Image 1: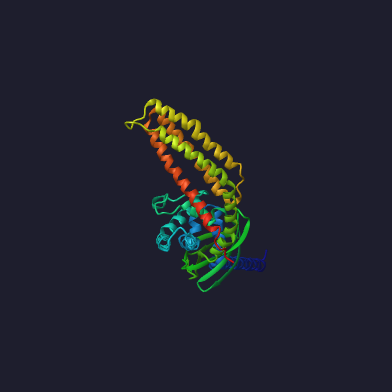
Image 2: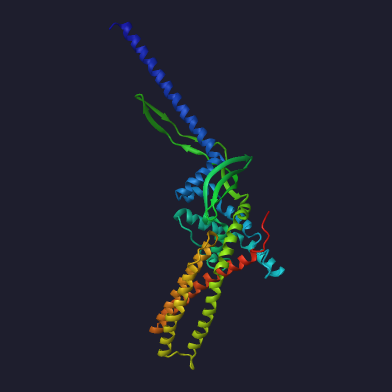
Amino acid sequence: MDDYTWRKKLEARRKRRKRERLFVVFIFVLVLCSFFIYIGVYTKTPDYAMKTAQKALAENDSATFERYVDLVSVTSKAYDDLTVDLFKYDEQLSERERSLFENFYVLIRPQIAQGAADIIDYRIKNGVWTLPDGILKGRQLGVDFDLLLERSLIRHTTITGIGNAASSGDKATIELNVIEDYTGTPFTLQLALQNVSGTGWTFGGYEFELFNHKWRVGSFNINLGIMDWRVVGINNYREYLDIVSPTLKQELANYIDSTSEIVNRYNAIFKTQQNTFTAMQRTRDGTMTAQQRTQIADYIENNIIPTLQNRQQELDSIAAPNGAIYLSKLRRESTNITISAWSYYIKGLRENDSKAFDTAESIHKQELAFDQRIEEIIHNSAITRDRPEPP
């Protein structure tokens, strides 16, 4: 090969390598620009925030979910919508009592909102609903949290999709399509979003090889100064409650009516049994004899517990509509826990076992909580029967 031909091949090779380098640089710049557009634009939109939150919800990723949803802010505003007319139609309350209750519910809003946020966080992480501990446990603040959750519809509302988004300045709204499971009612919630200061990204040096050439990208920082979006409330949550609740309330009222004869009949039987039970416990010196304890245990086992079981069987024979599933479940749980308390009481009587009596007392307190919840549901149902529904 002569010298001219050799130089010509070398020149062709240099041009080819130059074209390869330019192509690599072009591809790299294109990928980098696409990356910046994705990171700097789309990931800073309300739509991205909602889709990421929805994905995090499905994957039990509470940390990511709470990056895009301010649970305390959302639950605080929802609490106001949920309790705005809680005492308005209760004619058993005087105006002073009603005002005191309403003011009290405003005062405890921070604790309730934080408690709701905590149990939602637990639900996201573990896939089950629980109840808060601490000061919100039971009725220490005068609020039945389980009943509040049921009224909120959160446990039987399913997300079906994300709709349109609109933004103006540092505020935005986005549609969240849901369906209320009990009634099958579809609804579009309007979520309110607020933007918050974004953060920068730092990329370290990276070396790679392509077309037999080594390429290195040095460290650099990016701070686009664009905002992240976060859900801070539900603009039309009260409207959702007003649309769904009337159907649930009517179904609940119908169920209460259909079971009232059973409840009243057995309440009369329980009253008689209570009188008999009280009479059987009477003593001269405050200490029951062994024979007396045996007789009482037999009476509970052969009369009171069977009556509880028969009552529950009759209640179970009445089909509960969706709006009354919660009440029906509470009645069943109350029956089971009452039988459990009586069973330990029988053990205490027959074995003269103080620990069994203590266990029976502890379970009885749980039973009272169920019964109080049931009474409150029935009471509120009676109040709302004549309540004017929103137009």
